[in-house]
Length: 88
Image (cartoon, rainbow, N blue to C red; front, side):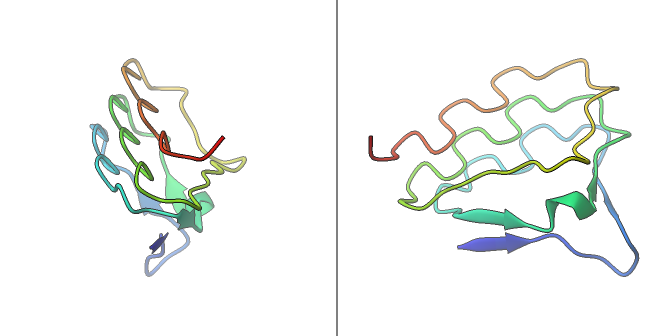
C-alpha cells in the first residue's frame, strides 16, 4: 500500500519522539509527499522505518531533500530490515 502525508497546512509536524513512526508497516510500498513531513523538531528516530516494506515486492523509500535530522540524537536501527525481502 501507499501512504500519503498531508495535512490542512503545508506541513505535518513529526512528534519530537518519532521512534517507531513507520515501524512494522511491512506491506508499505511507498510514502508519498514525505516533503510535507516536517522532522525539524524530532530528536529520536530510533526504529523509525524498522521493518517498513519488509513484505512488499515494490518497496521504495525516498526521503527527499527536506527530511531534517539536525536535532536527532538517536537513530538506532532506523532502517533495520527496511525492505529486506526485496529480490536481488
